[in-house]
Length: 298
Image (cartoon, rainbow, N blue to C red; front, side):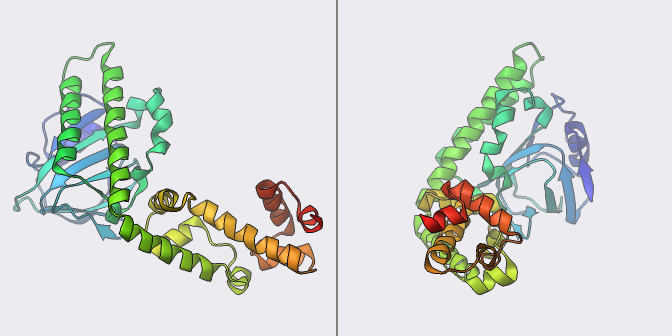
């Protein structure tokens, strides 16, 4: 396991020139020169990474899958994520760039408060952003502006200009992911169908009693997606994210049991997968504005 906590450490590891700025850099993938072969080597870095790459000699595995870069893809990795890298300096063919910036660069800015909105930083390998030639040109031009800015002598305007251009880059990425969701609508319809079937199977009273209420993480894993990607996909296709689908199913079954049976509320709570009846009462009150007893009378 190799940990990289600073931009200068990254440059040293890659055999790259000294960085121009302590908190942000852009590595050209055809110009760095590590002095060793990395086979199934795990890395954890302390900064955000945005990469655009074509080629086949530098494979990155995120989670259980390798990124497909053959046609040009972008990946977004948040700090503290684990990556597995295979690299052989004897191979050729990689091109593109890797933009890295430390959280300290944006910590006190409005962008720092918005980073959670860019959920694609937690997407998995099979959920990379596949960009067209036009889209590649757009994001690369913004990156060139960033390089020009952070390569100059730092003045009182430098950080604001760097951060504002980073935000523009991320906003374009968000737009392009929106396009990708639309262009893959047929595939995503199949995903929604599979998800609804999985949800139906997970929410039988027998399954709920044995396994409890399924979590977002469990459902996403079963579907083969990251939690953020599945929630974003469902939100765009159905109007509800994964958590909202789970809540809908709980309420649906709760209403049927409360209105259609005279079972004690504690029994209903256990049947629905709640460990404690009080948790069920609190959940129903929060979701419907009524306690179980109030709902039953209503």
